[in-house]
Structure formats: C-alpha cells, structure tokens
Length: 348
Ligand code: NDP
Ligand code: GDR
Picture 1 (cartoon, rainbow, N blue to C red):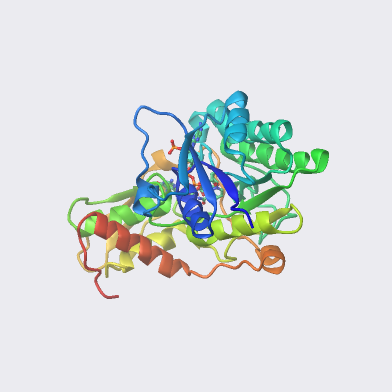
Picture 2: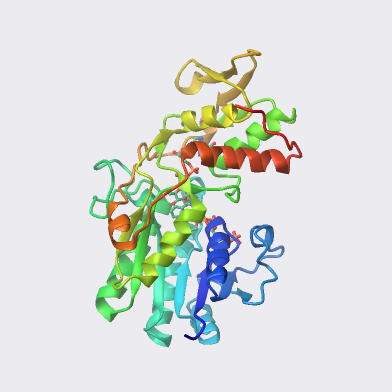
C-alpha cells in the first residue's frame, strides 16, 4: 500500500506534536503547518525527537487566508487533514473575540473550502471541544447534548463544528468532528490551568516561588492524557463513515482537587481555608500560604462543570482513556521538576 500523507495544522501545539509523532510511527508522510512569526518555536516536536525525521516536513500556512489553504493542499496533496490550529485559550478569547473568530472559526471554513475546491476525497478532522457545551444542559455530556457556549472561543468552535457537519452533508466530504474534553500533558502550554499548577508546584518546591495565584477553584473539568486523545483523532479518520465523537474520561474533578493532587506529588498536603475570593491553600506542615485566589483570573462567564460520556467512541472506534488523573498529574509535576532541575520526586 502506498504511504499515506497527512497535513496537521497547529503542529507547534501540544496535540500537533503528539499527533505528528503518532502518524510518523505509522509510516505517514507528515506535513506540519505552522504560522510565520518572527521567532517560531518548535520545542515540542524537538522534545519528542521528531523534528529531524525524514518523513516530517514543516510548511508555512496562514489559517485565516483561503488562498494560503488552497495552495497548501495543492502543494502537499494530503490524504488526511487534522485541523488543530486555533486561538485555543478561552481566557484570551474574551479580550480578542474577533481574532479568535477568524482563526478558530473561519480558519476551519477556509480549509473545508480548500478541500471542496482542490480535492473532495481528502479526509478532514476538526478539533471541536467540550467548551461548546458551556452552560450545563445535561451531565454527562454526549454527542447529542445541547450546546450553550460561554466564551467567544466556544462560539467560534461551534461555528467550525457545524461547518464541518454542513460540508459533510452538502458535499459528501469525509469530515469528522471530535468533541474532545480537556486533555493535558507535560507539553501543555503554561497558560492552561493544569500546567500552570504543576509548573508552580515545581517552582515552589525548588524555592523559586512562594505562592500560586489562581482564579475559580470550583470549576470542574474532565481531564485526560493528550497522547491518548490524538490516537482517537486518527481512529476517527479511519472509520467507515464520517461522524461526531466525544473523547473524555467520564470523571470530573475541580481545579482545587488538581492543586491538591499536584502538591501531593511533592509530599505536600494542602489545607484549604476561607472561601471564594478569600480562599487560600496552606502547607499543612509549615503553615505557609502556597495558593491564593486572585479574581483577575476569573472569566466574564464560566463553564462550571464538564464531564463527558465517551461510550460512542468506545463502541465505534474501540477508543478508551487509560491514564488516571493521579498518574497524569504526577507525570506533569515530574516533568516540571526536571525542567526546574529538581530531579528527585519525593515518595508519596
Ligand atoms: P495549542 O494551543 O497547544 O496549539 C494551538 C496551535 O494552533 C499552535 O500550533 C498555534 O501556533 C496554532 N495557531 C494559533 N493561531 C494560529 C494561526 N493564526 N494560524 C495558524 N496556526 C495557529 O492547542 P492544543 O494542542 O491543546 O489543542 C489543539 C486543538 O484542539 C486546538 O484547536 C484546541 O482548540 C482544540 N482542543 C483542545 C483541547 C485540549 O484540552 N487541549 C480540548 C478540545 C479541543 P503557535 O505555536 O504559533 O501559537
Ligand atoms: P479551559 O482550560 O478553559 O477548560 O480550556 P483552562 O486550563 O484554561 O481552564 C480550566 C478551568 O480552570 C479555571 N481556572 C484557571 N484557568 C487558567 N487558565 N488559569 C488560572 O489561573 C485559573 N484558575 C482557575 C478556568 O476558569 C477554567 O474553569 C481548555 C483549552 O485547551 C481549550 O482550547 C479546550 O477547548 C478546552 O480546554 C476543552
């Protein structure tokens, strides 16, 4: 069988790096698209050891430019496209709603238009999100739960999600949408809450930081391991039919729980005191305040509770999550300790 060729947008991001590694291991020719900036950073693909792989090619692409998408498809002639590029930080989307709509919403439309124009046989994966569920309509959330996005990011992703379904139904394009719940890893960006926490734990542990400041500690998320989720993306494009699938763990924990877990990985127990804006986390042994709420990290509208039902993905794709949140959190703390040159994890 001829070597398959794929195009991954957002290859410099967390999922892009893991997916590129997975598809290279399956023998794919991988084109990784990145956007031009004055100082592009390929640290993730470098840390996975794939930057120099003979089947890995980096290509410049502006997601907001239809012409750029058309030329990219003509040049790379992929069998599969994974659209992972986005302005993906929910918090920033409140300050940059129009930019978010252009990249995260219209970017997907541009790629689908390019497929329609260049080659309708290309299979397309859209990185949809549990943020589209937003204000809780039902728990756990499934492929049929009503959407109620609570941020410009969620609204833009919902546009891209329905556009994907529309191109599937209108033009017969194999366009699938993965509604992925939060997934994390040592490659997660520092602005997202899990990595912000594990990085701070490593810095507090090595004496380089006194206190971790966070926003809403009550938000509950369904957190899984990113490496397992990119496998689910690939399986969606190998299925017999294009469709929509939830990938999740069916477990939910608060931000506060994640902080407690992360400190436990360095043998620190956190006592929680006070409430709302005055809540603090104290090192149970030393009495030192190590966590504080800072309302500047609150969002204008919050998604309070996410928990996903992945039964359809399990049934149709044979996909299921394997890594527990305890294991994931420990893996992330360990990686951050290493980065901060503290190489010994205190036994729990
Ligand atoms: P990241 O934020 O780590 O990566 C986003 C990628 O998009 C980066 O490569 C970034 O490039 C690129 N990008 C941003 N703006 C543009 C642009 N204008 N043109 C081209 N590329 C651009 O996200 P993740 O890897 O975590 O997520 C991958 C996708 O999955 C995203 O679409 C995200 O919204 C979605 N998603 C993520 C979930 C998660 O929990 N991780 C859950 C559900 C959906 P640069 O490096 O230059 O910034
Ligand atoms: P989210 O992830 O918004 O779910 O989007 P994030 O880690 O940013 O926030 C999760 C929850 O933690 C609360 N929170 C804080 N968040 C951040 N970033 N910083 C803080 O200091 C802080 N304090 C509390 C947030 O309010 C929120 O409730 C992620 C992204 O990867 C999206 O691209 C993806 O679509 C969704 O996950 C599923």
